[in-house]
Structures are given as C-alpha cells and as structure tokens.
Image 1 (cartoon, helix red, strand yellow):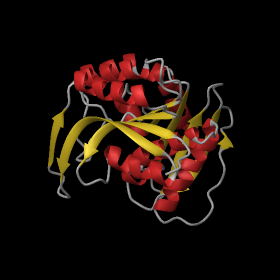
Image 2: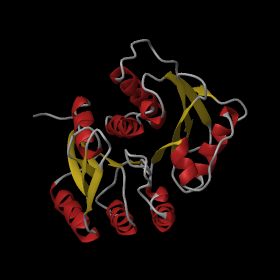
Image 3: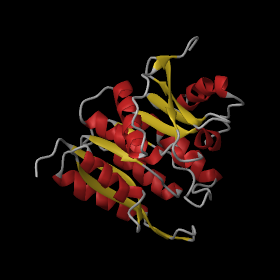
Length: 261
C-alpha cells in the first residue's frame, strides 16, 4: 500500500479502539499515513467509565522505540497520555534520539476518560521539565493548562495569556482549545514561534470538553505536518477534520490575528 508518510504514535492502548493509539491509527489512515505505535499503558474501560490500567515499564517502552527506529523513517511524532515519571523519562529519551529528525506534537492528556487525573504532582513537574522543550507544538485544553501550573483564564479575553504562559514551558508553539461559556462554541488560540497570536471559533456538536476532541485534533494536526503543512495550516485543517467528523458541514472561519497579541 502506498502511503504519504509515517506517524509515530506514543500513548495508551484502548481496548474499545475509540481512544489512544488505536484512534490515532484510524486518523492517520484517513490522512494517508502509515502508523507505528509505542504503547505506554494497556487500558480496559466500559461505557460506565469503570477503568483498569496496566502500566508498561520504561525499559519496555524504549525497547519498542528502538525496534521502530532501526527499521523505519518517521515523519512526525504525536505524544499522548503518559502516567508516570518513568514513562515521561522514557518518552524524553525517545524524542532526544537523533534518528527522530521531525516535528513533535505533544498533547498533555492529563485527565482520564473518567475525569480522574492521570499524573500526580511529581509526575506533572517531571513532564514540564522534560517534554515541552522537545515539542514543535503543544496542543492542550484550558483545563489541562490549568493542571500544568495554574494557567487559568477568568474569561475569554485572558485565553491568549494562557497560551503565552503555556509556551513558557518551552515548546516552539501552542494550540490552546477552550470552551466559550454559555455558548455551543469553542475557540482555538494559536501561538506561533514568533509570539504572534491567532484565534478561530468553531461549533460544538458535543457538550463539554469532549466536544473539543483534543486527542483527535492533535493527531490530525500531526498528520498535516507530515504532509507538509506549516503549523497554522495544520491547526486549521485539523479543526476542520474534527468538525466534519462531528457532523458540522458549514465552512469554518480562518484564523484571525488577536488584536494586541
């Protein structure tokens, strides 16, 4: 089968195939990319949000990476949920490998599907020390930004500041997705490497943060980078992809420069 490139997905395995690396493989395939995976955790859950998880060791995680990098050329990396300092350190070692000369998209994925927090205080601190400076882009929700260090907005006008503060962790750029209170809409705040801010509203078909669909958004964004798009183009096309998947058929507006940003 001819493909347009290869994405490396780092994250958890979901037995239902709806989230984690399985969902990423589907998104990659839709974009015409082959996918390789490094599994961090094996998870079992049901619709009642009962949840069990088996965490894989850092040694085995690095072994998976070594197998992939010996045989395959990677065009982009997408990092999803990690659950321990050991996993974070293993992921940092993988991203520091000189054979990975490609964009890296990191989604903090701090919360599990049952809303419990996947990373404790020490692990969150280690995440901030080891991963953001290795990212081409961090894709996060406002709630995740708050968990990463109290980057909280009291209103929409403060969201650009949250994106700027999140960027101080070390990533080249940031895409912050947030709900607009009292509206069936969300907004993406894009901060580029030069420090310029852009924003773009979009409809919410599903209620709450699940409507933001940040895991799928970050994977679709990574796929667009592998296909040759620049960061803003990738962010826009990724949101188009998510909106279309949620049943929105009207054309979304383009990113607009944040005045005073």
